[in-house]
Image (tube, rainbow, N blue to C red):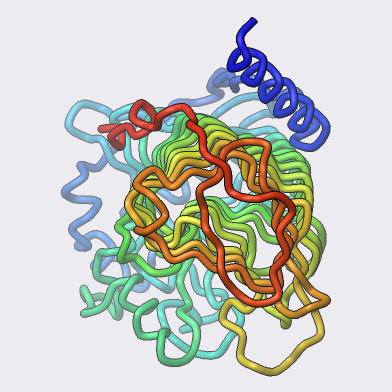
Length: 466
C-alpha cells in the first residue's frame, strides 16, 4: 500500500470514529411518506392565490378566512389519525392553496404533492396574537403566530415534492387594501430601531421526531424552520429558496435540542443557511451532511450559545457564494461553551469570510456575564477559493479559541486572503495547511505544511430547478 493510500485510509478511519462518537445518536434513514387519510384538491390557481384580491375582499368583509383554505386544511389535520397524512393536491389548472396559520397534530404529516403550492396569507391580522400586533415594527418580543406550528406534536412532519411559499416579498393586505409594504420591508425598517413583527414559516416546540422531507420552502417572511426543545429532527432532501436580500430569513435553526440530522438538501436565503443555537439550554448531537449551500450567511453556530453547543459534525458541505462560510458567532451577553465540533470535507467558494469564529459578534460593549469559549474545534479537509478574510477571534487571554487545522488549503494561495488569529491556540496538521495567521496572543503547535487535497469541482452544483 502506498503512503498516500495509507494516509487516506487513516483519515477515513479517524473521521468515521469521530463522527460515530459525537453526532446524531439515532440511526437515521430516508423517511417514508405515510398513507393519506384524506386528499384535498386545490380550488385556486396560483394567480388568484397571489393576487391579493381574495384576502382584500375577505378583510374588507371582516373575515380573514373567507375564500382561504385554512379551515378545511386544519379540520382535516384535526381529524387525521396518527401515522397518516393530509394530502394537498393540484386539480388541473387549480394548483394553489391559500392559508393562514395552521397547527400540526402529533403523528400527522402535511403532504404537499408535486405541482401544488401552499401560499401563506399576506394579511397580518391572520397571524396577530392580539389585534394590531403583527405586521408592524415595535419593541415587543413577539406579535405574530407562525404559519405552521408544531407544539407537543411529536412524530409530525411536512413532506412532498410541492412548495410552501411564505410570500415574504408580496405587499401586505391592510384594511381591505393591498398596502405599500412587504414582510421583508418591515425587516429593513427594523434595522434602525425596533423589531419586525412578522411570522416564521415553520416553528416547532416540545416536539420530538419531527421530519421535513423533499419539500421546497421559499420566501419566508422570517425564519424558515425553527426547531426548539425537541429530541429528533430529520431534514432530508429539502430545498430552501429565498432571495439573499431578504433579511432575517434563516434556513434551519435548531435550538435547545438534540439528535438532529440535516442531509442532502439545498439552501439559499437572506441570513444563516443553518444556525445551531443554544440560548436557553444545550444543543448537542447534530449532523449536517451531504448538503449544498449557496447565498446566505453560511454554516453557523450561534449567536446564542449560552446554553452550550457540543458534538457537532458538518460533513461533505459545499458553500458557493455565501457572505460567510463556516461561522461561529457569539458575544459576552449570550456566550457559552462551544466544543467538540468537526468540519470535514468542506468546499467554500467566493465567500467574503470563508472562516470566521467571532466571540464579539454584535457586542454592545457592556454586559459581560456570559463569556464565550470555543474549544476542540477541528477543520479537516477544508478547501477555500476566491479570496476573503479568515478570522479566529477569541475574547481575551482566558476566554480563547482552540482550533485544529488538519488539511486547510487556500486553493488560490494565501496572498489572496487576510488571515488573523487573536487569543487563539492553533494546532497544525497532520494534513497540509497553507493558511498564514497573524495576530495577538496566538499560540501555534506545529506549522504550515505543503500538500494537496481532493478537488472541489464536482461539489459545486447548480441549485435544482423545481
